[in-house]
Image (cartoon, rainbow, N blue to C red; front, side, top):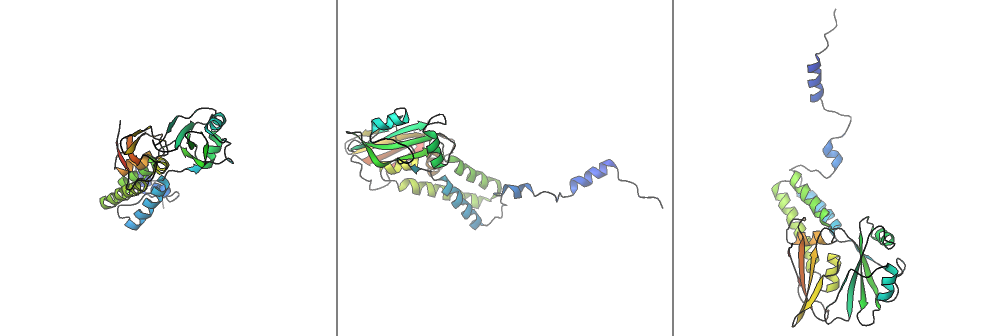
Length: 262
């Protein structure tokens, strides 16, 4: 009996294309964060919570064990090797906030970057007495000089690729609610600086209050939070204006308004 004829090359190619490859996992399984349109909303809620928790600005208190900054502004400038990028204060406050920026070629960058676990540029914000220049105890914090927008962008992409419209709308509501809660709970200049990760560009006094303003970009740590709070594209620059009592006491209500800027 003659052996069966071998299939033609074209038939063999079609067969190999149609057969599933059991030797490697599916691409969707490798990515891990993919979900089908029928993914249950509890799973979405877990993912939303995880991503938004990662979106909170990472700050680290800086003490003398991390950097020897000295007891006053002049000593800090000498230790850091440069004057601050900017300083700002409320008109009736006895203290002011000053901000420095460091890259990986600066001596101060390595201990600060290690403390906040980043490979980005680092911002340092310290509080000093305005008259004497004395550094306020436990008054310094370090921030990564990188927007936290990627956490919100990742969540947006996840929603668009796999989930049905209801789940995507839920994701958008959760993101904005988280950002609004974080910004709305900040009632003092220090608290807002903690959310934004930067000192305001200016604080201008009027009859009763002081208006402080920020212009945030992809280099501002809390930029993603501000963009999410007004449902703006995370690629847009965001302006923030906050009105505080002149003496630095807490505002009775949420003092800040964010808007898309130039």
